[in-house]
Every structure is written in structure tokens, then in C-alpha cells.
Image (cartoon, rainbow, N blue to C red; front, side, top):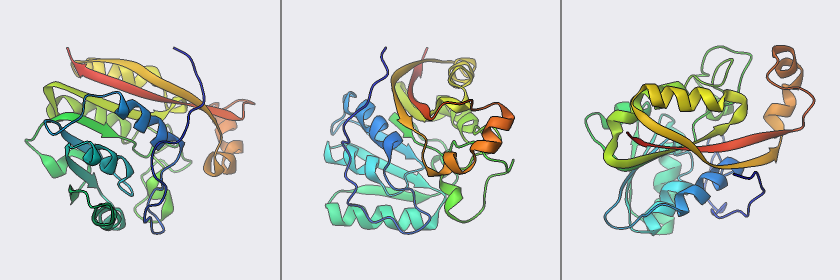
Length: 226
């Protein structure tokens, strides 16, 4: 599998008030993986951490029945407004990951969660950093999604999860496999460090998460039931 650049495929013309994650390179990489899935009116899709709703709308345009979750009230409102403006039906709920859909399963579950390593060990409770910070190793939400995946991914369904290789690709694959799923990298791309990573490079280098490189690798991990 090669590492390469890619062309944006999701609209950036979306309402995204302060504190709501705007479509970026990880969004576009996940959109490319989403485009390879067999999505249509038969598909029930769940998005965990929808942000502005860009990917939820992509799936809705292809006919999927989409449920989009976010813990942020602003993100929930933004996604609802963007769905109205796009004339697409998306069920939007506020909640903490899968807690908003307990007992339900889906044909496809996708997520671009906060995964940036942070000097703060805890998840931020407010502010813009809530959309990207995820503890010292960036895995506070990734691990929860891996653990919850078997319950929300249907028997013939799949999980698509995007994050930075800084968080540990093997850690994600191994955690999903321990949860009873078969997982592999389905796509990857090298991208320049963004403003957040550049602002904390001294800390990242002290902790050994980053050396002298100026790019990070983004990966999409696809998982199915074994």
C-alpha cells in the first residue's frame, strides 16, 4: 500500500461555527475510503463525531439512512442546518459516542474522532480544542470506539476509523482484534503538520512522539467482524 496525496472530495461550503471541526485532510481521506463502500438506500450508517456533518451528508446523498452523533451542541446544530441547506435527511443526535444509540447496530460506522496528543491528560470540556485533543497519547476516544465497535457494527457491517499514525496504528488494529474484529489499514496519506501540531512540537519532541519530521501520516483503518 502506498502513501500518497489526494484530491479533496468533500464540500468545504458548510456552516461550521467556532468550536466545530471543519472538513480537513483527515475528513477527505475518510471520504475517499467511504467512496469505496457499497452505499445506497439499503445502508444504515452511523457517524461518531460528525462535526459539521460533511461525511454524513456524503453518505446521505448516496441514499444511505444516516445517523450522526456529536457531543457538541454546536456541532449538532451545525449538522442539522447543513442537512437542511443540502436538502438531505440526516438524523442528528447529541451524545457521547455510542451511548446515544445503545442497542442499535449499523451496516457502516465511520468516525474521525479527536486524536491529537495533548499535554493535558484529560479531554477538554469546552473550547475549540474539544474537536481535536485526546489526552497524552491521543487515544482517549480511539480506544473507546475500538471497544464499542463490535456492538454497533452489524454482522456484515464495517467500521472506518481515521486517525494520525502518531497515536499508534498497531495499537488500534490490535485493540480491534482483541474486541473480536478483523482490522487492517485501508488507506493512508502523508500530510504536513497542521497549526495545532506545529504549536506543540517542543512538547511532542520531548515526549518522543515526533522527531525531526515535518509531516504526519494519516491512516484509515477498516474493521469487520471475524
